[in-house]
Length: 164
Image (cartoon, rainbow, N blue to C red; front, side, top):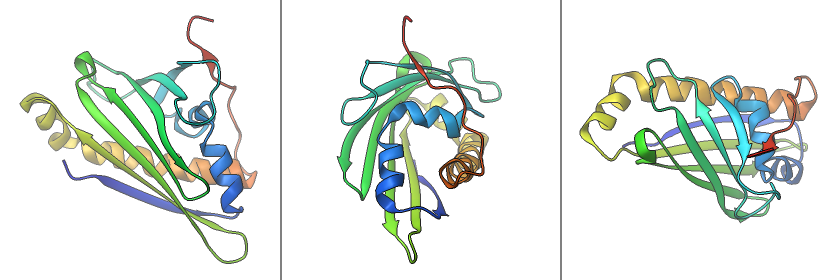
């Protein structure tokens, strides 16, 4: 399917934004309005291979569990996360955070999410409002990311390791 892309400008140095995003435990702070019940998949939540499992709180979603793993990190420019969700984890996801330095210590963050539905029913769910809902949630998530990094938002408790 066509990827969705959202962006925001954050008043912070690109390196600081990258360091925040390179720790997957921080992702629950700005996405917990639609991704809940976060659990880390390993003890070290920073860098390549760090991952988390979560539940997607979408309307009518019966198979809400998904996971993401940080696959590529190009400091301080780009972070790629890969994962799966949906029934039997059959929907592949690739999320990319691109960070571009702006003027006066600001950073332009663009998040692009591409999904690969495995079946006709998965594709139909995306086309019947799933993509629009996901774009709205991603936009809100980046707004919350900006508020947290700029110090105007309220961070949530840290994510724990699965089984603890």
